[in-house]
Image (cartoon, rainbow, N blue to C red; front, side, top):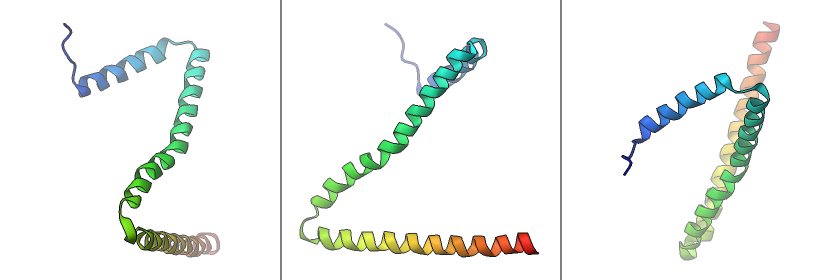
Length: 103
């Protein structure tokens, strides 16, 4: 029976084998693997918000009668904080741009 290898040794083994394979791999295969990695990364960035929603919605549904009010206040807080952060970023960037550009 094979002995189980821990997580850290497996990670190190994967990193080392990736470096060694990358050194001797033809460029076309390397580009193909990079393309796959990029597409898979974009897919993960696309799907993660839906996974989060899939976990949050049932939790809100289990709250009962107060769920609507709680959801409304949460959305309001998120909206107000987003508007506030966007406005602050715009004003700060405008001020810094004028300082850098015009002295």
